[in-house]
Amino acid sequence: MEDPSSANPLGEPADESGLSRRKFLVLGTATAAAVASSFAARRLPAETPVAPLAAPTTETPWMAKLSLRVNGATHALELDTRTTLLDALREHLRLTGSKKGCDHGQCGACTVMVNGERINSCLTLALMHQGDEITTIEGLGTPQKMHPMQAAFVKCDGFQCGYCTPGQICSAVATLREIKAGIPSHVTEDLSAPAKLTTLELRERMSGNICRCGAYSNIVEAITEAAGAKDQA
Ligand code: FES
Ligand code: FES
View 1 (cartoon, protein in one colour):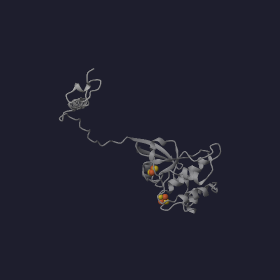
View 2 (cartoon, rainbow, N blue to C red):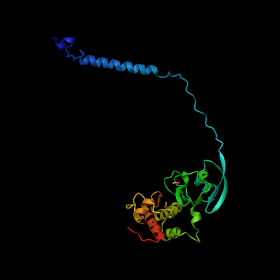
View 3 (tube, helix red, strand yellow):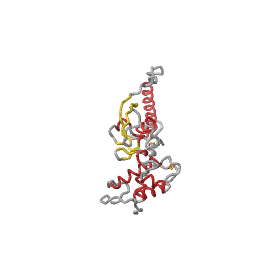
View 4 (cartoon, rainbow, N blue to C red):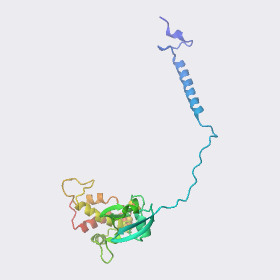
């Protein structure tokens, strides 16, 4: 039988294929270099022309005629089709009660009700709401004749700077409707029974409305007061 060490001059043992470890490393390095050079050869030459980016253009807005029902009144408008409901309310109808906090659906300051359900008006286009009944804070009540939720916020000090308050109140009114309609939340324990008006339920349901003044405890107290219910926790 042939001595494996005689297969190479360095006397390294060879494996069954007859390759020594040193030869294997040399071969591997050469293969890697060949692969790398073949990729390099495929690279685009430096002078390859690149299509220039299209020059920015001043787009002509697409305008649309629409009518919006807001707080019981019909308004005829002609708007850029990209106008959000929030901008239509604030900038075109001068209903500035709904506030623009983040304009990204994260703070709830722009909350209004559409057909009785709360939505973030910064996240929806005005054009999508023809025929809907839109209610803003101005439509809930007036300083002389407040909605019970507005009165409860005043009574319980449910605000400090007041910036989030219109959205909080619209959201709170819709929250009580959701509870009354038996719509469960993430923290409702018993889905077969009516949801209880607990602090936990209210905090969860109102979690989309941020208050930078931190009036949360008073807001929960105000909603409980407006519902005419003591905390059932
Ligand atoms: S402004 Fe709409 S959620 Fe913040
Ligand atoms: S009262 Fe100031 S942000 Fe809520």
